[in-house]
Image (cartoon, rainbow, N blue to C red; front, side, top):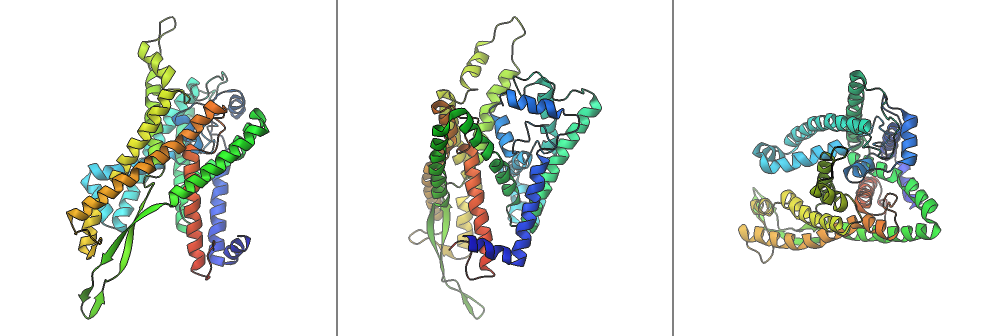
Length: 436
């Protein structure tokens, strides 16, 4: 392994890409600790040491920002607006025919969709920045802390903070695209990986301090088993054989080859977990806007939401979380993988599945395989996402439990993809890749 990394850094082109990627990651992490103008950094640090962080979407966004959200730094919004914009543009392909046409046009159409994603990212950044400033002033961002995070309530300060946070989102988006073009690739994913990995030492240290060595080593053992499970499932796929008939084009004979369609067990990635987390936060958000006036009784439905849908250790919350992950897994896979489109492309180029007739029978067969292979993938996603909630019940380590849920899915997936890309670039210059 060490010799493989040595070969990577001895290759001038690959060394330049690796150093450029490390430089962008360093800038990204430095920006997470630079406070926004108008924010009292001392009060924020004191609140973080004494207050309790919010659950739900706050915790998810704080995870993706590497802890920058709760510090209200210039990179507080992180990469979350870009992720949301990308998902929205992808889903709009089903609703807006123009978006689907652009998707089918190739590189030129993809560049236009990317431009739309950038515009939507800035718009969502403005919206999220305004919400974050409102939460910071109302005390809902760091509950349990009475110190003012933004002492100056003037309009100029508010506009300056919103512009700074939005500009931070645009800068992160630009740095991610730079890593994709001039670095090792997967720019946005690598920035998310860096933000999540940055919180691991602090989380493990907090478990050692608060729970003791026994719980610490138990968490490490659970983490290793979880990583092994995620690697196994993420690499699992169903390969559907495809054969191409021989055709004469001029004086040449083309076709006659055999290949396969790889259908992964987890085709949806981490998107269903993000969807489910966001949807489960909505009831808590609605209840916050329906709190009674001082001296007035709490409405029964608001009390039920507060008791059952805002606590991760409640059985109703866990059951809904698991069910929504399964639902969104099927929903997202149905949008991103179109059996009819795959069948038409195969038929256009003379391909067929052995034993299956071309056309509609092929599409029906692909749908049959897809619907059955998605079930274990959905159950696997729900199981991994529930690990931090189960840890809250068993060892009371929800806030500091790093191995589970969205974090481990992203880290393992991005890590595997990055290693594959470095390995492929090494094999272009050497007979051996990064891994033998």
